Image (tube, rainbow, N blue to C red; front, side, top):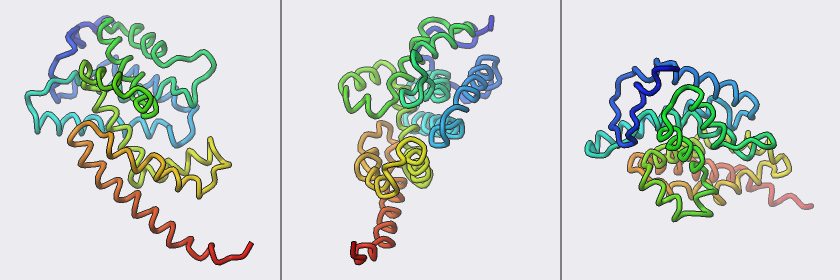
Length: 236
């Protein structure tokens, strides 16, 4: 706890290295353990496995973006912790009185993180949401200008909502939270939201990956429609 200020520079413009020191630090381990325990209450569409996929995707996008644009600056630790914490306090699952920004701030402050870093990670976590961006697109755009790490975590989270994994998560979420929607309603969610996510990707890496995953969504939807075509011939 006492060495957090040494590990996390006050500057939010620090260019990350790709060494693994941070992921062996007490801070990383404590946050990892906290999130693993916290996410146990969520259904399998938003469980800890989802968090780990978003973390892995965030690290991949960060590495690719820096490889293509070495002049860009990101705070690697903010990306990692933002990805780990991005679903803590999610309104779909939060207990009464729970607020994401407060949960994140309390956790990071408890483990000795400097205020500017706490604020940065909290801002990332608060603004990952797709619905939040649809409601306030200009605000999110301004936040990304100040905190480009948000774009990386957003893209990672949205990539996990599409493709094969996204299909599985869609049916899992419907069963857990919206059982009345049924299978057909889950398929309708593809065109209502999921197939649109490619158009809101921010990073070049995210856009490339979203293209392929969106194709998988569309292929699956076509297979679904083909296999259900005969249903229309049944009188009722």
